[in-house]
Image (cartoon, rainbow, N blue to C red; front, side, top):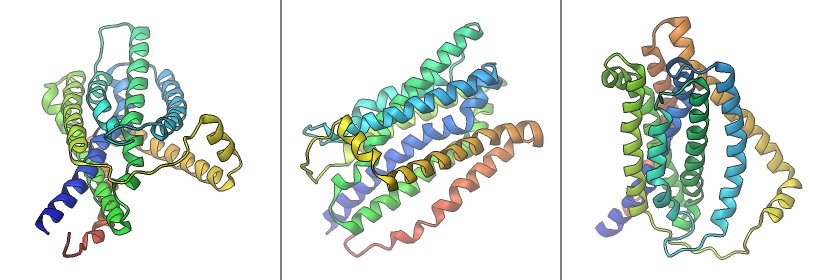
Length: 291
C-alpha cells in the first residue's frame, strides 16, 4: 500500500507541476509582457496591440494543428508525454529572450519582440496542449482523474500566484533601479524553474492507457467541427472569456501604475484573483485510505 500511495502521489504531483511551470510563463505574458513592451522596451502601444492580436490568431491555428500532431504521435513514451521533454528547454529560453531589451532601434525592437513572442507562444502550445490532453492516458479511474485535475488546478494556481506576488518585488530587487534588467533577470528565474519542473513532470508521469483510434486529419476535423453547433457555441464562449481575461490582466498593471499610483496593489489584486478560485478545489483532497 505504501508503494501504491507513493506511486499515485508521484504521478499526481508530476502531472500538476507541469501546470505550475506553464503558469509561471503564462502569467508573465498575460500580466506584464505588454507593460514591458510599452513602458520598458519603449515600443508604440498601437503596434504592440496589433502584435498581440496577430499572435493570438496564429496561436489559435497552432493549437488545432498541435492537437492533430498529438493524434498522430506514437512513441514508447506515449502520445503527449514526449512533448514535455522536447519543449522544456526551448520554452524556458524563449521566456528569457522575450523579456530582453536588445540594443536596436524601434523597428528592430518591434521585429525582435514579434519573433520572440510568436516563438514563445508556439513553445507554450507545444508543451501545454499535450499536457492538457494527457489526462485520459494516465488512468481509467474516474476518481483518480478527479484528484489529478484538482492537484493540477491547485499547483497551476500556485504558479500563477507566485508570478502575481513575486514579479514586481523581484524586478525591483534584481534590477538595481533598472526595470529592463529587473524584468530580464526575473524572467531568467521563472524560465529556469519552468524548464526544471517540466523535466520533473516528464520524469514522473506515465501514460498507462493506450487508446487505439483512427488517425485524424485536418480535413476530417474541419468537417466534423463545422457541423457541430454545440462546439461552435462553446468556441465562441471560450473566445469571449479569454478575450475578457486578457483585457483585464493586461490592464491591471497600467491601472495601478498610472491611475492609482501604487504598483504594489497589482500584486495584491492578482494574488486574490488566483487564490480565491483555487480555494474552492481544496475539498477534493478527501482521499481514500489507499491514497
